[in-house]
Each structure stands twice: as C-alpha cells, then as structure tokens.
Image 1 (cartoon, helix red, strand yellow):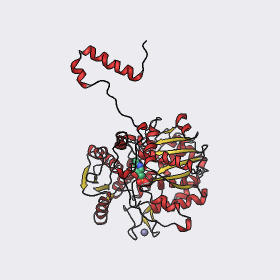
Image 2 (cartoon, rainbow, N blue to C red):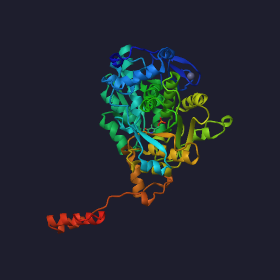
Image 3 (cartoon, rainbow, N blue to C red):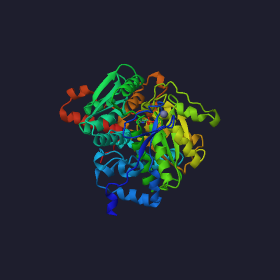
Image 4 (spheres, protein in one colour):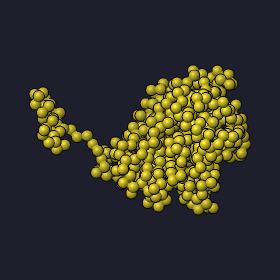
Length: 483
Ligand SMILES: *Cc1c(COP(=O)(O)O)cnc(C)c1O
Ligand SMILES: [Zn+2]
C-alpha cells in the first residue's frame, strides 16, 4: 500500500473548546487561554466522527505502514497525523528527530527486585532536547508555520517562561524555524541548573532573566500575552498537548495495539503530559484502534502533591487546593498549582466512565523514594531522570498498596535523560542535599571515583615505574589474577 506513505489527505476542523465556560473558537487566531473566562482550552477536531469511516483495523494498518515512511513529515510524531492536529500541510511540519522513543523492558534482575514485576521504561529522554517536551514543541512550531503561511504573517514572536525543559525545547525548535518566528525564553535568575541554562544559550535563543522564581516569570509572560502580539509556548498552549498525545499512540503501536493488562506511570507537574496521554488513549479507543484502555497512574512527590490530594479524597468530598511546594529532586514536576488540572479532571472522568474505578489513580511518593528509584533504574541499564525515578517509586508504592500485581506490565515514563538532572545524583553520592529535600543518602548506594595513586607519586617515579605502580594498585582494587 505505497499510497499510505503519501502525506494524508484528511483535514480536520480544529476548534478551541474552553473547559471553563464551554465557549468555542476557531483556530485562525492563536489563543492561549479563553478570552471569555480565562479558562484552559482543549483542541478538538469537529470532524473527528468522519474518522470512524475507517475501521480500527484499517487505522492500525495505516499507522503500521506509515512506520516505514521515509518523509520527515511522517517519521516523527505526525505518523499519527489524523489523530493530532490534522490542519497542517506537509511543508508546515517540523521534524528534529522527536518521537518514536524506545520502550526498554527491564532486566530480569531489576524485575526480580520488584517481586517479578513486568515492567519497561519508555525513554523520552531520547528526544532531541532530551525530554518529552519536544513532542509538544514540534506540534506547536508546526502550527506556527501553518499560521504564518495561511495568514501571510511577516512575524510571530514566540515566548516561554520555564526553568528547564520547556525552554530547552522551545529554543531548539526556534533555532531551526522559519526566520519569521522569533523566540525568547524567560528564566528565573540563578534558579536554573548549568545544563538547563546551557541548552537555550547553545541554541542561540534570547535568554532573559527575571529576579525571582518561576511564578514571577509566568506572571511576566502572561502580562505580555494579554497586552502584546506574542505566542506563549507554556503548557497552557493547547497545541503542545496535542503533540504530547503521540506518546500514547506510540505505546499502543509498540504493544501491537493490545493494551489490556498494561499500566502507564506518568509523573505529574503542570499535568499537561498526563492529560495528553489520557486524551490519546481515549481517541484510539473511540476509533476502535485499541479495544482496552490501559490503566493510568499519576505520580507526585509529597513535596508537590495537589493532584494526589484531590484524588485521595472520596469523590463527593473532593476539593481543589493548590499547595505550597517544597524542594524536590523531581524538579520538573515541582509545581503546586498545575495549570492543566481542569484538563486532568475532564479526562479522568471520561476515562473512569469507560474503564471503571481504578483505571485512573494518583499515588504519592517520598523524595527519598524518587532519588533511589532513579539510582535503582540506572544501575540496571536504564537512563532515567529523577522524574522517571518518580515513576519507579510510584510503581513500588502501587505494589505496596496492592493497586497492581506483578502480571500487569508497568510502562514507566522516563520523561528526560538522566544527564539533565545529574546534579541530584551528585548530591546523593556526595551527601550534600540541603535539609529541605528530606533525603538521607545511604552510603551503600553511593558511588565515587577512587584515585589509584597519589599525584605526588607521578613526580617521584620514573615513567615506567609509575605505570607499573598504577597498574599494581588497579590489580589490588579489582583482585585481578595473573595470566
Ligand atoms: C515538564 C516535565 C515534567 C512534568 O510534566 P507536566 O506535563 O508538567 O506534568 C516531568 N518531567 C520532565 C522531565 C519534564 O520536563
Ligand atoms: Zn471560557
């Protein structure tokens, strides 16, 4: 079926739908929040029902055939074009290698430590800027290209406030984009790690610093969005949510569209990612592409757990309260007032209506469990960041609470590459955590480099003797046997 690799002909009718007041808006304008009530939007395809003209079986064949596509527009997240943002033309689509990240089954050794648990990590740190944020950014920038072309704009200024991965992704895509997209990132001065600052600087972004914390930056960019012509790329931006749905589509495709007996673990920060993942599974279910919804477990740290607290209450007693966060090693999820919470509530309701109670849950884990979850994963062949460690901690917690058994396959979202958050590993190994994290490193889990010989010896010994002395020290340390 070679025609299946051609760019799709289907075009949807996308509209913004406000979760606050129900208002709808066309997508010719770039909306950030609802002009009527300030609520968050979902983007919907008003033509979605016409997609039912193909059976689930036919859709599976379309996507499986497209998996071999050689065109840039179809080899990333837009393999699932009709399910995401089907308004763009092939030329609008940006591809920098995002999506299609590997799912790596855990080794028997790791699985055995969790009572024989079936489990795998999906390495979203293998996206181009080393986090899942690239999925949403590829979609948002493709839409900006679409707007520029269809509206004949001569310039769009794209701005985001972020402490890390969002700005790295935005700066990367901006550096590749049409010259008519100008971009800037706004960061809290002195509150970003060297790696997080290095990425937008290296991409050549205009990096503006605001004295204060992330929330101060957010207020600045929202003021800009209210009063100036600027596209905000923060996670309220509904186009980013659409791109992030690709995670769900890829999980389904990898497991041959059979998601019975699967449990998907996702860290919750601003809650955009878990929203997108639930939305993606629901869309596939509605079209018969999958016939069972996987269970979804959100995971939050006890230092930033407003969504956990909400769902921990009995349904009739649930009340939404933002929390004040405390320092977290899952820094990318350290958010007390997640902007996408209304989206989570919306999709969780729909999810439970179909898959029943227990199909969506949120578990809470300690900071100690998060960092040790990351160390455990990475000692067994994974490349997980602290948020991926949070997922593993969430799985361990779910086992303790008997919410999941060993036969169910847990798919853990390693949302970024381990190297992005490596400062926390250093703090654990060097025992330098500030008290506020509430983490006590276990010396048995620490790993430090060992010097084989004092530097002064190098001065004292002749070169050949020095080599032998170093080697001798290595022999003793490793207990090597002579040949
Ligand atoms: C943004 C981010 C999160 C949190 O995702 P939300 O969509 O804000 O819930 C988790 N991990 C990493 C690495 C991130 O960059
Ligand atoms: Zn509204």
